[in-house]
Image (tube, rainbow, N blue to C red; front, top):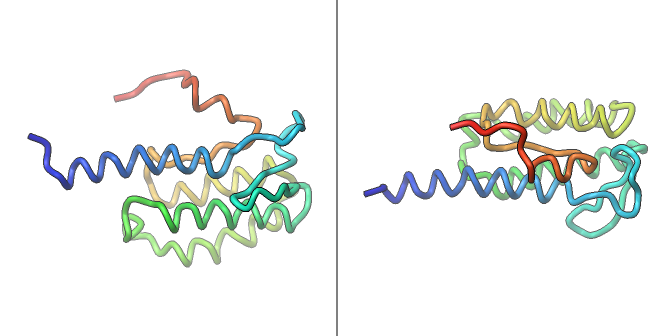
Length: 134
């Protein structure tokens, strides 16, 4: 019999991976170029070509983790501090591709292989994984 805590933990991992993929990479809105637009939770389209747009995407991703991550202690990471460290890097990113590098580094601090971020141009990559691991 599987314990309730284990089921909660397992469900949390799966939910976190799916939520982050959906929240952070909803897809391009009529644009097929690399990572230039993002439709956030408020359905307002922003461009990652601008500092304001990159910060909007960063904030949306950070808040999605803050609100929905399965571990309320963030795996013993000070999640608020991570925002102060990585938000300026997101603002200084030259383009959308560099922004998603910053977001991946932010998520790497959690050391959680089940939580990932996908750029809009990668929206179908997570649906068709190239490998399977156990």
